[in-house]
Length: 68
Image (cartoon, rainbow, N blue to C red; front, side):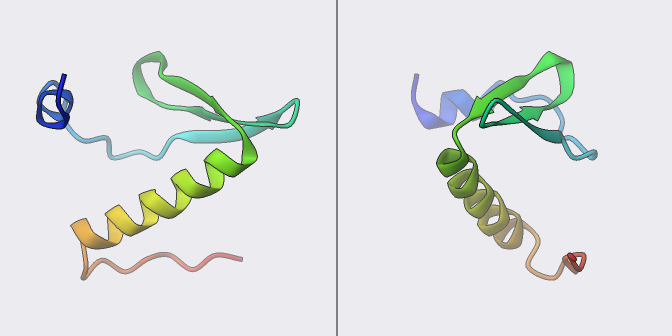
């Protein structure tokens, strides 16, 4: 399956963020429809960077909420 085929079966974009927690040294991401992903901290950090970059590219004029 190529990248276009992987994206073509996607449902409507989610409007609510996933839930994130830690368990046994892993980062757990719970999304819609029972989607659950366990990642190492390193994988979670890189995934977070990629998500932010993609979100900024998709909506360059969107105001990102302040953190902290």
